[in-house]
Length: 520
Image 1 (spheres, helix red, strand yellow):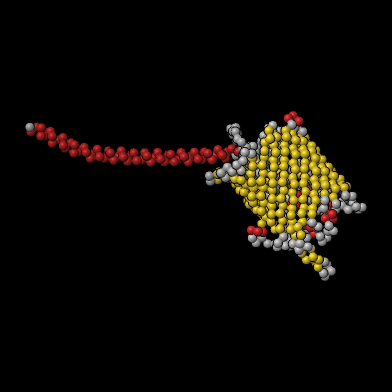
Image 2 (spheres, rainbow, N blue to C red):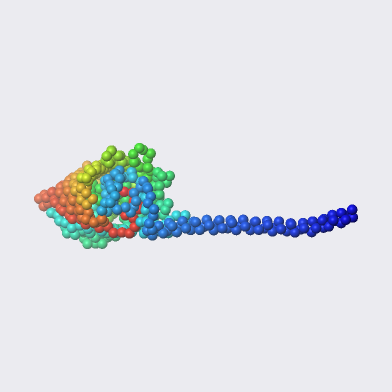
């Protein structure tokens, strides 16, 4: 019994001694487990950072023209080697000439171009996006020709700033452009133009500078900055992308020599229709030479007084002193590759004749494209525009101590142009355009009626054209013009004049093939 008691006591002593050792081991195990969990969490965080870094590096390297895997998309690649097909038609791959955006070539209902990351000039990750320089472009446009009239009349007959406007050589434009984007948020575009005037004077101007959001909710884009107003078939298109060398007569009258553009804001909304359709709404400042029909500038009125009225400066002191514009455009697929594009545009705002002077400009345009199989394709482009210019009554000095009263009236100017073009092949296009412009309401002051006003009198023009694309990014065109104008008064001048111009255009650049996000 005594032995059993001794053994029990010994067991209790051993257990009492072992319990602290067991408790110490459990604490060590708990600390080790906590340390292991912390190490695993830290490794996961480092691995996630490494993945994000690798993703950004891949995006940066793709911007350096590393080959990317082929991908399917419902938008055109910006770097493809073909010219735009007619509206609504799929692009024809393998074409051997430049990326043209002339009227009748890009459907207005088409979504903006996608970006092929292998075509950008430079890119770098910034925050949660990628900053890109998509293109640096240089367009050279010059002409040589002759006319049967004087230099002063040439500048009146060809009133567009990029028209061939003299006998001999004309440097129509040298355009330097930069396209960029901050994916996936917005695109940006800057266009700087150099011209040599008919008098030999150098002229630099900032033609466009804007940024535009990517698609919001897949249906809307917002644009802000200096941009060409989306009016009709020709005004939103840069001159080096026109089919014909000269600005349509009616657009020169309504918008001045440089077309209608300004600093402002616009919103474009894709509409839920069975066909491609969109609506554009926006507003711009009403002042400056590029706002000819609105508040304009004193310099513009010195050269081209509308109806003989004088310039009255007006301040932009409220929302009523801005120019508002709208455009509704649709593209219909008619089968067998044939497409019809229909558009309607309108603008309204104050004009420079006084505080209650107002202007409304509206127009409609249509483009039909018909593929002819091996015989190429036909394109027909037509546009009508009208301006209602409500002029205030004005009193002006007659130069002899008296005054002349210019009556309050509404001047109406209207006109249209219609062209038929046959793309015989990738290299050759032939076509012709007819233009007409007229007016109602009498020009006053220095003009003895509309017939003496070179920017309101009746006009006709017929212009046959031949274009040869002799290289992928170069083309030559020959255009003849028959002009009949009322302001050319016999017998000193013949009302019918003739001219012919050879135009050469060459495109250079790095990066994407055309303007990023520029939705002509």
